[in-house]
Image (cartoon, rainbow over all chains, first blue to last red):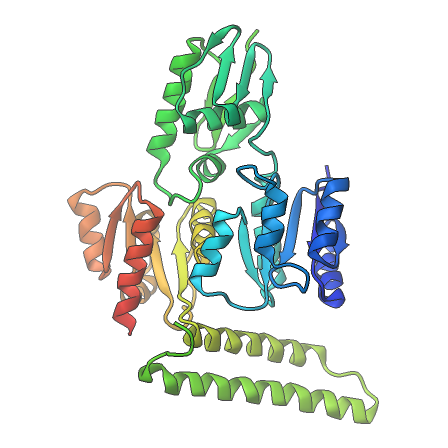
Length: 225
Length: 177
């Protein structure tokens, strides 16, 4: 499926040129010219990714991100901040707290921009709401998981990981993506924690076959009758 | 922070600004001539001038705003990019790669020790000059020796929290000042 992108920039030429580069790379691209318009667009239909100008007359990127989260833990889709000004580190810490996925400085080569868009799109499926796969039910935001009627006792990270695997059942979820989405901003080297989480999930499920290890790549959830 | 860059970087700032102005002036002259003659300007030259101008602007910003460029080297490109992205979200100008490239001014190298297995002499020498921060999966004496040989300023054993990496980057950046 072609990913739908929303480019938000108050400067029309910048917005249109960014959109054109993305269209040529095969994406479906919509353009919004203000923060307010961006929020209206999202209400009508959620994009797979938003490229958001940092400084716009009506609102700055952190405000847009706050509205997008609307009280939730995270923005329901990846947002890449496009910025003209180089911000002091403190400003970008705000970015991560409010859920921006990545930053691109304007004028960055388009190959780099496209690579970062691809990277952020890998995070498309949100870890929110309830996921039901056969007898397995996971709702990480409520802190609950059940297999049939039996409650699974899982710590937060294994629970989020189980939800992510379940939401993409049948598909191999790469280790790198699990590390990024479940362990967040932590630096690499959490491979061991990943294995421990898988161990805990398997132990709690008490049944073979649900979580498959795909060596060198990642893990796959396979629904068991 | 801000424009207080210390006296040591002032000549560098002036040099970068000077080159930025010359590059932009060249591009403008090229366009003006083409405009007068009613001809289309040469896109290749203008494009390369603009790329150079943006690169110079990056140098100016790095000096004036104390932005730290970082190169994360990892043979697993996706892991390297994840680290680079985490650093970008913290305000670093971070890129990732699976091979060494020409370093930007003041660029700090974060090196996964897995990379060193297939390094040629030239790359090894370049890394020694860079004095990288080394990240390794195991704390065995052999890895330690490789890190020492490369003149590593920090030696981090996985799992590494981003805060610890940031601290190592700050220590390394202090050596440049």
